[in-house]
Length: 493
Image 1 (cartoon, rainbow, N blue to C red):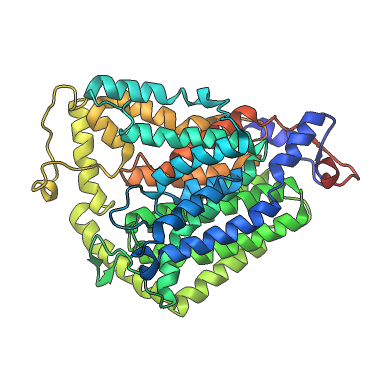
Image 2: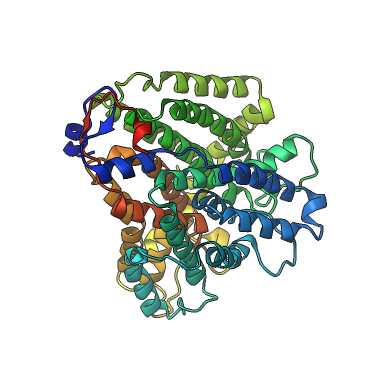
């Protein structure tokens, strides 16, 4: 973190931005994530509807699609719940043979609700999407893929950036609430697991087979590899919100609730994450913990967590105690699954390498990139060497978005993808008040782990979050230095 971070925000005590009325106004809007009256009934309703959709009698009935339409419609009534829907639409169950999936339902209902409520579509800031142009243009020139067609996956993904842009404008400075809604939405990936735990009629996906005798549990329509990334985003995103709120010192009651929510988020997310029996989930969780540790000790060393009630110790102690109890009691067969996957990893790493099943595909991907570094294999329709286990299929995915584009369109294509991915992160990180965006950093880092271990570049949650982070970096006024004051922050709302 840069030196401006330390010099501008090192002062302890009651924290209120000095002087500038605009900074005060937007500062209050940014920090206050208290739910409105409308959001207080939409969130519980949508959580109940999400749980209902996991149940076989509901999902296989005629009311499933109307439930999805109802859920999407009410979510677009506020930006916070709109981002909730953006986050959960990717893995929300839907009936077999439905004309529209939840993501498509989201687009149709968003258009209708936006014009009904706002009478127009406010897309100011959409030009911030310009970093995607080098990636898409290079990909189109090299592969000839018609990325501009409405049925293209690129077009569909970008649509969710457009939706996010309109929702951000409707938020009117309440950007942290948008991220909060997205974190809660990603945690809905645990709904099927918990419904199943309570003995309700749920068909959990076990695609991918077993590992050491334990099935890889996913959601109802989403397999294990699609479930663990949103769980990482949700629990660590909430933790990031808590950390930044603790540094700010604003809204003590809100900070207390965020602490409790963080413990609840980890309890909700960890057992289903363990049940995925996926190396990436376990490794990603460990990497996220290390990243949080680095950020936390950095904050401590810069004396940014000196205010009363800013200690993370109770939160850490509570979370670790929760993990210890779950593991030692073997609740939800957590210990059995962890031990089984460790035994499976030992066998596969001995055969393939340290990255287990990923080692082979990453090695072959790097071979291709080194052989065709400028234009990749797509330009001249070259035939690449593929891992032996994929020979029967005739092709493979790198299980890494960056390596995939390096293979297909060369190093320039891979660099263009990386530039787009990291653009909002770098802009937020370079701000002198970058500590305010800890929730964004942790959410983005979870997405990076997702892109490094899987080949899902069209994940709608990513495209919505990217737009949110980019617009926050561009629009949120830089906070001025804190000073002591006897005035309550609530007076500046």
